[in-house]
Length: 310
Image (cartoon, rainbow, N blue to C red):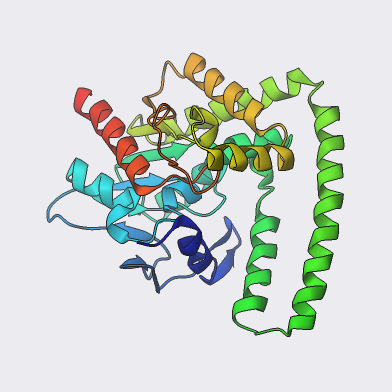
């Protein structure tokens, strides 16, 4: 069995391209892991049934199933098999729901937007808010681009050890600077509670726009993260401590955003899957937001229960 970190390294080798509308996304026609496949349209699919409607899955890297090695354990395959529908996974690394709205608009213009859709959300939105950014600012694209270049240097260009050592020193220096800069930004931003509230409201408004655009045929799912789990292992505590040092407002953003959405989403079809492994003694996450296959299975059960009640 491959670990999250092994799968993560292999997935970082995947080639990306820059889409003028959506930013960085995966290139088409790539095979990786145990049976995983990015199709000719640049997306993953789970097509098992004939004469069955296709549902769309929209999310960031968590819905893309980052860190999952086996195709059979991905979110889109599990949803397809459980709901007995075909799934087209439109998720992309770093996509938040503002990008989802743009993506749905483009697919609609092309006549490719599925009749029913699932929006699996929370992580990218909280990350954006924690950095004081609007959802429309796409602050993570630069990070994706830098990471892509770094990994292409390591894996494809075979740079010399001297260059690796120099790059490592530079990265350490940048990390120290970034940490100081992040703390200054956090100290300034945490005093402005109104700005947090405005960003929470922006998220709700984008969700409502998606709901109108899809004519109500959309299910929003609040995804789990390590911030929603009762920490039970040393590894979990270490992961969260390291992440909190790097992103000091992220825990606050998760708590505030999820609470705000649950209080103000009465007109939306919503599944709160944030606590599916709250009291689970396992180490259920590879990092603060990417869950293992067993946790994704619990999410799938929560989604299925909601759909069966509709």
